[in-house]
Length: 527
Image (cartoon, rainbow, N blue to C red):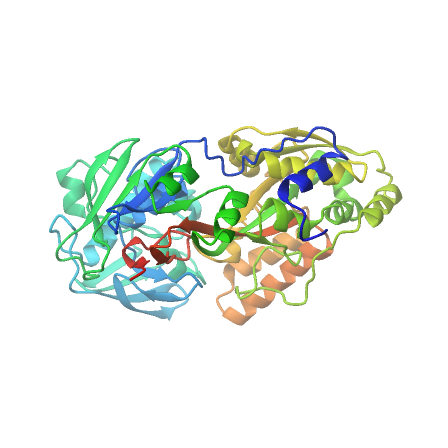
């Protein structure tokens, strides 16, 4: 495909084999409710923009990761993770493995919550107790931390009531019910609460907040704005950014161009690319640590139990063009595996399937499925991607019946079972950067659960991975599992996607945490 082909031409090309194709990009719809993050700058309005379904300062609300981004400005974790996955001190200064199930932790002795409550080992114990009781009782709201910390379901919990042993205010032991090779990473997803605040407010985590983070909440107008300001005595010290605001706006590009905001997240990729190419705007980006895939559910259609059919569906899609045009370069074709280069367990020996529609047609005929008809499910926010994928498949003779409900429906069917043959979604390993997180939704150990990958060998490998405490042994097992997925063409591998922010030239860069949340306090402004 010519580098001069634009997104509209690409959509027309794919539509030619599939009939009518919507040309409006809805993957990051600017017409949906928007939130902007603003900070003081030259125009008194330095802003970063995110799209969220509601406005809340609940630090554990799920499945809204963008609400979590706001909470990141208020709360801290014991261990932090840089954008490239390096573990660094947070509220903990040191951590050491005593044995495969025990971590010894030393805490900072100069940390207070914004309400004046002192941070100690008891704060950590209280926060875990809270999640193990209130969190588990309200699993729908607390799914993100409960999943990352493996607190649910309770009978398989990684922690119990004896997991925290307090030695003194700054020293503690954390014990797990079984060996866990990524416990340190899990603690990077564990926000610490003030026990005094929770007592004083009857546990209000929705309209008020008190954390150890750089910012405290100055004003909160639900659904409209959250004003942040730094506070004297926060352990990070003082940075140039003193205030910040998440504010609801309508159109992202218009808000940027009018100066109402200075940073925007979730612009349509083609809009972001054109603004960056104009030279009038800067872009900060990083790997999202998410892989866009299509699950092929073997139990829903006998054709999907045939490796030749699964391979044909991979060969039918031009991943280079898809990433270049539909994602405007904010994505990279995979090498036929979930994990990205540099991650533990990445398999450097694997290569992508390539684009070969003629071979795809041959394989379908050989398998006896030349006139295959399949149903596909995708969230309405990524309808255009789904339509493009459908058009590629239809070009090799696979008729696609596409349904695009809300994201919640898709999440439910990914995790709980579906009658659809194909599901377009993202395998996220955003907060832990680990194979185990990428498996959430793909692998469920319950015998009666629906399989996305129908391989006993694959399940056996995952069981070994979950128990392996030696890093090299674990990485080798992950590489073996990736090889098996590749050889069996278990998924349609589309893209390693990127997170990006478009921002004014006043801002040199927007620094990220591993989990894609912006480090607002560390924003660098042009001098």
